Amino acid sequence: MSKIDPELKKKLLKETQNPFKGLRRLLWIAFSGSAFLGLLIMLSKIASGNEFQQNNLLIQLGACILFPTLLFLDRNKDP
Image (tube, rainbow, N blue to C red):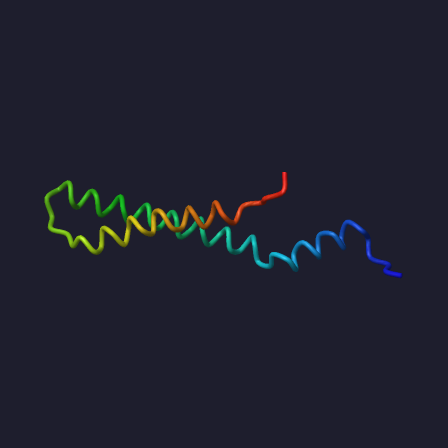
């Protein structure tokens, strides 16, 4: 017989199924913010008439799509 509180047991089982969820979500938020800030800076440079490399713009756009998507997919699926 287990002497562990049922609520604690439920919480621990949930954590073992999805470890480091809080840390992952924090990283996705930080990476998303960084990608959008980088895109904003790049667009302001383009608007001022500076030259840019198309590859860099595509990387920033890809990051602006990828990291929020990962954040969305990592959400709680329980109602």
